[in-house]
Image 1 (spheres, rainbow, N blue to C red):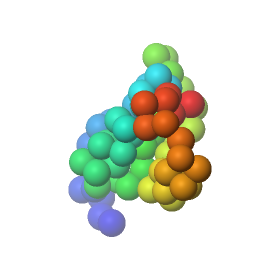
Image 2 (image 1 turned 90 degrees about the vertical axis):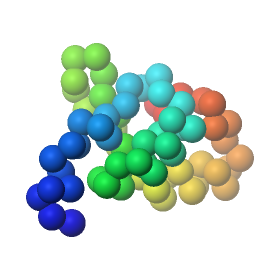
Image 3 (image 1 turned 180 degrees about the horizontal axis):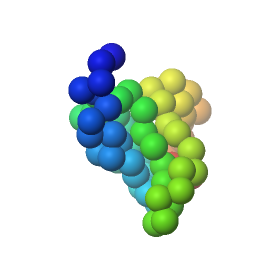
Length: 68
């Protein structure tokens, strides 16, 4: 991964009310391979990776539940 991959990191930021479905779409559309979950003030609350999504699917989690 080169520096150009990090230029649009803000595209990987979602709010804590975003759904797992939205997070999957975000992972698919960005080059970072991670979703950054931040509050309205921009404080990082956590991250969501491809592995987190796989584990969630294996648990049969609802895709329309919030990521946090």
